[in-house]
Image 1 (tube, protein in one colour):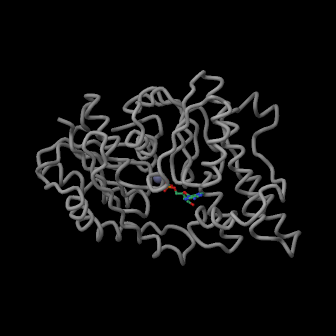
Image 2 (cartoon, rainbow, N blue to C red):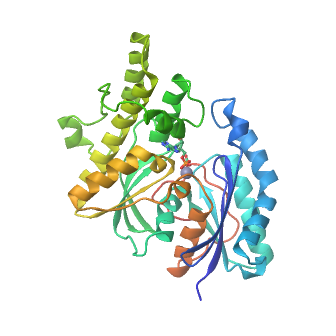
Length: 342
Ligand code: KG4
Ligand code: ZN
């Protein structure tokens, strides 16, 4: 029998519950407080925590209804233990602990970043280890070598300043496109020219390739866009959006494919909120095909934060015979990407 695992995700502004049976998705409920944060231009931690508290029980109930199961059918519970906003994470961890104790089921405290990558295992038939993973979210951007998603992840490189999603959000703000910025820039860019403005590709000089081939930097790009806007009173917004997006996508793919090449791993997973970007998906498809790399990107809805990814990682942990998290544990807001579980 395949284990039924319920996953709880509360690291940021989504209260998300996923239920899987083995690698089959049974329910994926997301209650987002994004509208309550929009007027502040970013996520307000206190508002997020309160919203999680209110949404938790109804979301669990809805997920059970969608999955057509009852609480007693659940074999294990997984919860995002970090990284993320500490108050928000705590609501998830406390709820999951209570549920696990009440039901007498094992509890897995898992890493949000590994969970992003693991959601791909619900979509693609073949196990994807070993693989290179390009993880691009609002809080993190890194290149990983995943030898075993349940326990062996090596960080090849990461951003030295802003995360890719953060850069999208900040540029969207100065372009007056609202929050969250990624989807807004994605839409705006459709009617613009990606080659209209030649924005810089961070950390791609020959010296950078020699010393930090897998690291990213987006702060220079951000400054370049701001300067361009200051110096061009009649700028075309769609062109700025498309050219900015192209610069990010170009550098992400250059580095991801370089990692595949140098490690000899011919599989790439792209995960995290920015993986929902339509231009990244198109460029990745084209370049991976040319390079003979098997590309896996979850469906856009599974790229942004969700509970299915937490349930997916939990299910893989159960199947791999990994031990559950022992005793009571705290959320770890700065959990390192290499630590798949607590
Ligand atoms: O993974 P995620 O949902 O939350 C974190 O773990 O951070 O990622 C959120 C980030 C935000 O910065 C958002 O602007 C970005 O993902 N994002 C996108 C798109 N959809 C979401 N960025 C570019 N294009 C998109 N279509
Ligand atoms: Zn995330």
